[in-house]
Length: 420
Image (tube, rainbow, N blue to C red):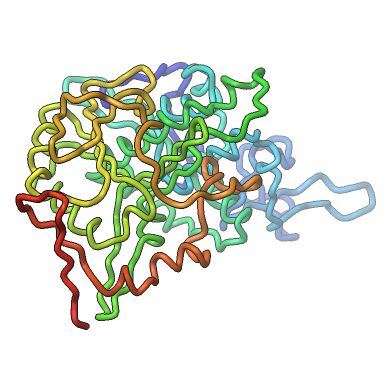
């Protein structure tokens, strides 16, 4: 991702302020109508409300129109304006919803989701920044140049998304602080890597590339995409002892193809963690009914790391389904292609590679939702649904912990019952 250069002419040199606007606000000055409580922007010769400048924020500026002959001035002082929402295209609204949940995407990732080319994406993203819908930033690179442009939800975009969900909008200062923290976060590269994994899967459903294709078949491809925050809220197990077992995967998804649905937890490795820390995550997955919700995928930064992980977990013998991929040997189809090594006690990283759709099917079968507010979540389930709660609240899952112990019989497992 680093080292990619956007077209300066298409993306623009100025990237919006931290509140999501395209530039600094003009100063406010007194007007001939000040005695009526009206205010206009300085240096405006013709005082009028222009739709392209309307913003829905806590510092709403008033606008005044010339007086009618023999009447009072007509104005819209202090009235919120939802007009920008109706000037958005469907793909713009989907993009805002995705950014509201997954926080940041690069230009190439957005192009993979909604456009036929990066150039078209750059042109539209520039307009969305000018509207205040998006906030964009770049990272300066050693030796010169900048990284690819990264996009987050601007303040106006955040307000409109909150309005569509009947939620309280964020405070302007709090949203600006969130954007600053996001741009300076030491985990930004990891977050972009996780989003790149899911965007590569979602690209197979890009509506711009299938616009002229009649598709009477059911929805296929990536039909479930949850962020780390959503996973943390959903996948928790409250034990009788008062302890809570909480999964924190980097993402959770479902890939559907040929009537085969593969639900998976994703652990995205950048190589900065020790192998001990990486394998240590398996203990939490062991204590959780992981097989009731999906398989565990490891996306590793190199083949050498993949081989080392296979050797490390061979002595641990987890009873969950694990598949691994090395990102230095990818396929044109991305993570959907034949790149996955299904782990077994006798497996080797150089074993036969499988397509994502050929991995074992785990987790619940959910009827697709026809009207979901979050894109790529047609097969998402309700964490509070009775069948889901039955798994999380079952006495079987809460009363014991399974610890596979190496022995001459690798299929043997010892169940340690915990006395609460």
